[in-house]
Image (tube, rainbow, N blue to C red; front, side):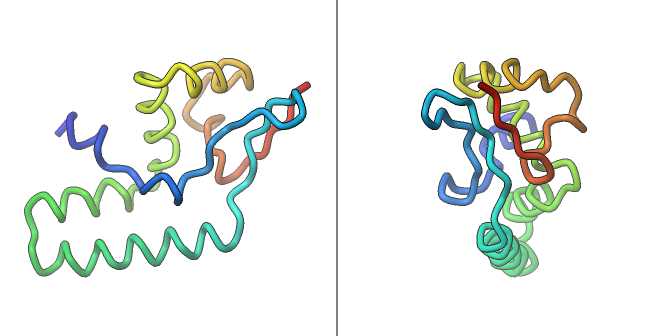
Length: 108
């Protein structure tokens, strides 16, 4: 199941990446549009999972987890130095700190 955890993520256009804006580190909030699009995506996966089962069901369950956002960013930090630096830069030390869906950060 561990390899699936690395693959079980929203497509890039449905994630909220930290970035530098005018020299300031910024981790923006999810917009209402992004939230709506993510819910739609999960519902589509749920329909596929209910008819096919197997790995589709596993994928759906990973995306539907309550801690999906935290899991995604911690697993992303393992293989992406930019995410690791952003987590360190914003001093996210626990999984509850690491919730870009719930917090917005700007740091100079």
